[in-house]
Image (cartoon, rainbow, N blue to C red; front, side, top):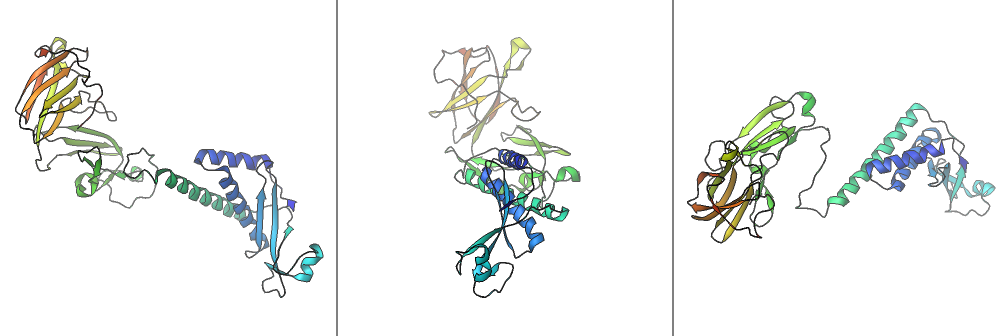
Length: 342
């Protein structure tokens, strides 16, 4: 087999670079390159010619060959050869064998080169999709991170988003806590929030109208901010707590850890309004209490570590708790140490 004129080192460098970038096996990239080169060669030798390309994975040496089947009577000269003709170069050939003959070096034209590039791109995309599928096929039901890439979108776009940004738009999603450590996708039942695609940037939550239901404000690139009021039917009691520090001008006690005890359960929250992109949430800690009709007690661990206890009482109200107004409480090992919503 004859060596095709090509930069051997360059072929391996390209294969290595694509394999690293796409996180796929180097053998797959080399295979895609071989398929592409073979397709380009068929543009010269005929589309029915069985052309094979081989790249040595260590040296980068590139070879071309033509495979033909040995037959008694030729029906397709591009892929078949008679026994007599085959034995001129392969004396041991038999009918039914496939013989391989070397092909001379090629200089590919513009069209052939473009065709070869398309084959490589398609093969790499298929390998990348297979890799991604294998990586996530066993993670159904889990929450994962992903990259947003520009592509063609057919879903409705929110009003006011320019055409350039519309290509990046995605629908928002909404998940409900089932109370058993899992979340359930309820996007389909909330078309106002999830029905139109946006280029989402930040999600701000807070009780805008002080009715005990958390509302949402969404901002997007190239589009207007959208406020969504929570009009879900009441399904339980609630409590909203704002922790302040009078000695510091009455400012919000960011970093305060708040826990509510009722009916043998404990709910924990963290006064921390900065958890989304370039925005600030409602500084109040919101607690969904379900059927609880009476709150036993409230504890606040202030940012300086001081722990205070406050009286409980009826739910469905907004409380403002000031540092120093509660009863000093002993430190306990089960005090809140990390933020969370329940």
